[in-house]
Each structure stands twice: as C-alpha cells, then as structure tokens.
Amino acid sequence: MIGGLGLASFGGRQSIGQSRVPVSDLAFQALYQGVLTAAISLALCGRAIHLLGASNAAAFVALGPIMATLMAIPVLGEWPSQMAWAAILIIATGVYLASGAPLPATRPQASAPHP
Image (tube, rainbow, N blue to C red; front, side, top):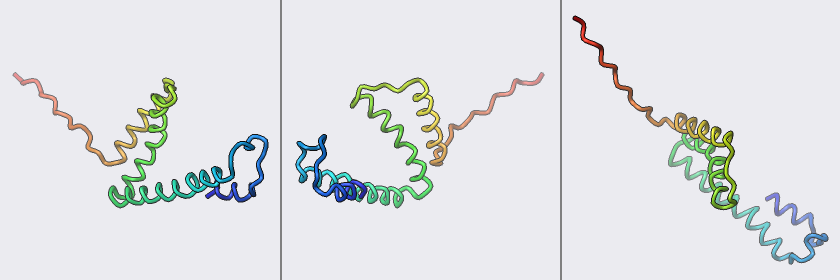
C-alpha cells in the first residue's frame, strides 16, 4: 500500500538513479510488493489463526526473525554471531513454552533403601 502511494506521489517522473527503470516496471513492483504480498500474508495469517488458535499463532510470530536469520546463511552467506545464536535459542525456547508444548517428564529419583 505504501509502495503504491509512493509511486503515485512519484507521478511518473524519474530521478537520476531511476532513469533507466521504466514506469511500468515500477508500477508492477508497487502492485506486487505493496498489494499482493500484503493480501497473501494477511490471508495466510488468518488461516494460521484459524488452525492454531490465537494464542498459539501469536507465539509463532516471534519465529519471523529466527527464520530471516537462518535464511541469511544460505542466501547471503552471513553467519549469525554468538549473541544472535543465543537470542535464537531464547526465542525458540519461549515459543516452545508459549505454544503449550509438553515439557519432558522427569523421572522420580530412586531412594536408597533404608536398613
């Protein structure tokens, strides 16, 4: 939406850095990134809320930065720092606990026999 507004305010005029880009390509990108992507993401988010429930779906929103960080490894060749790995672990643990996943069962300690 904002991309489309930016293109509308652009008014077909081209600046020095955009002189080689046809206005039709700019309009297509504004439509694709500003409208279609938003509509698809909202529809998929609504479907996730319907399937998982509001509280579980809200917990999974926190996985967005983790997915972006992990996708940067093969796509950009960037490796997370130690601090980023720690943050990934903390966020993933929080999502696991917030989603209501079961905690591992603890075994009771066998007591020593009394003489």
